[in-house]
Length: 156
Image 1 (tube, rainbow, N blue to C red):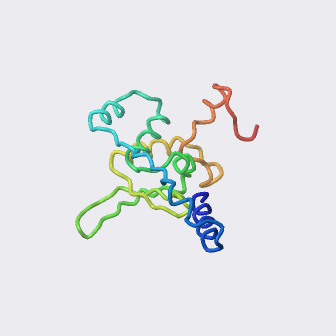
Image 2 (cartoon, rainbow, N blue to C red):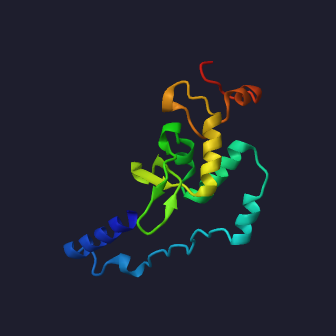
Image 3 (cartoon, rainbow, N blue to C red):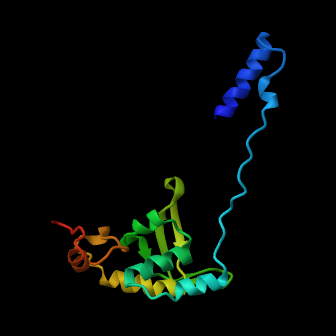
């Protein structure tokens, strides 16, 4: 934004006769760094996936790996956002369910589950207390652990 202003100001000065040439023409535009995210190599991914983790952390790791979702949408997944109805496409591809989230730019996003993900998500949701309907988060620690660790509890 600043560079655009400086260029416009330089053109204005030339038009008004303040200077003979645009002083911004002599200034090079700063180059952007050549930094692109690098995905994990297959061996790195295998080593990450075999790490022994507590159930909730294993679920988050698997969601990050298999869905490509960002951390915040994963943390906002509610039990009601999950569907375990199998999807079958005309080309023969089948998926064991979907996850509805809010993606970047507040856009609704439906992510297809992979078979390896369905078992973990289903196991975690069956352990989640849903006393208030579909409001309970899927990716949270059970209440008893939160008390034991001194973390926040509901209704306290």
